[in-house]
Length: 274
Image (cartoon, rainbow, N blue to C red; front, top):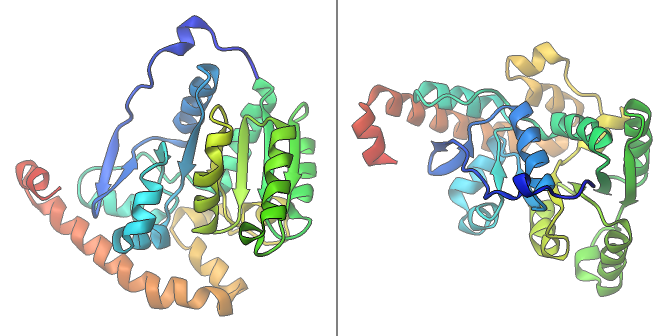
């Protein structure tokens, strides 16, 4: 990683944010997200990105422990078209959806350019190594500092946890992609980021399997109309039916209805209800 320059050591600039049911989401594009991380790394500052989708937002609203956990992240960007639609309905628009499964590509591209050291943590067995091969082939010069796929239950096993900490220490990463699913990945990042305070950490869910092609991602046009969840549901209905249908659809109606109502209020009313 490049040494910080005096100009780059300025204080972190605040980012615009949108309130969705009491949860602040940063109103930035994917390009600006990557640029912000680049500026922070150049200044010698690390951070943490969370990418709330509809399911994450539902838990952020209803579970105080998860809300307090994610409030410690430095960036919260909307990984879900329902969040983008909701912000538009309440007349506080977000620039675009910023998906973790897209950020893994855009940050890998920038990492190759800036000589950042990238670490891939988690995923199904073999997917971190497979994703590393695909990313190296896609972005010549990309430095994959290490990969690690901990066994299930590692967080309760001191020896396995120590092995993970040692692997990270050897790698000395600048960017760490954590693919363990939520909320496990957020809890792990919160526990470990203090050991590498100059690194940027991102929870990316199933993204390693998307990169390797083991799980097919929805076509771009399906993503653009907000139906990527349906594409995933068809591929894995047993695991995802409750999340997307039983929990997700009713909450989506609450979110969109609440934000539409706020959009009908005056700016003064919206500020009072925030």
